[in-house]
Length: 246
Image (cartoon, rainbow, N blue to C red; front, side, top):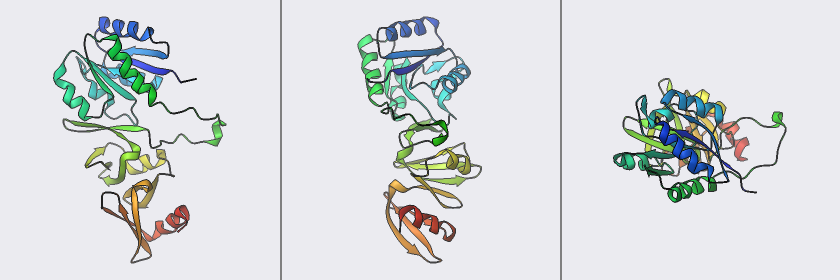
């Protein structure tokens, strides 16, 4: 059986929320897990309900929909729903799932939700709570913001994460942006099967490594898929050899 899609509605207009809830109620595989009418309430609801997808208004008196996502450790899929079509380019630049202009058409909404449903992970066999860690994998995504520029980035797209002051700079696609998290905080949440601490200042996505060469000082030089290089310190070289059976 295909999984249900857990959806949260975020809109400052009561009538708009009511109309969206009515449209969602007509789709049997959608579970509307709640509503929020401003930025703080939306952030709280996302953290509490952990929805698969958010129907997110762009302009609210308390701020923009982008403000809801800013600073979340991981973000759900997002379909922007707004009366203002001038935000469409910016929304699609972030790699949002879709952008719907009010009044929302039922067929258009269903099509967007079907794309979201198709992205849901296949349920895994249940395991004992102590047998796994709450780690983030390649399909989890973060929301990055640099001024007016915003991106939804799947962790699997990130090549490397480098210390930037008290925060971390993430390198992805042909872009880079700062996330307000320390490198140590990110390392504790990221899957060790994917991200490796290459040196004091850098985490590297092992899936993005294309070449490994010994370096002076008994370390390694890693060449990533964009041609950039990352140095593996002597201290970390042994762990890399064990990890990759070098």
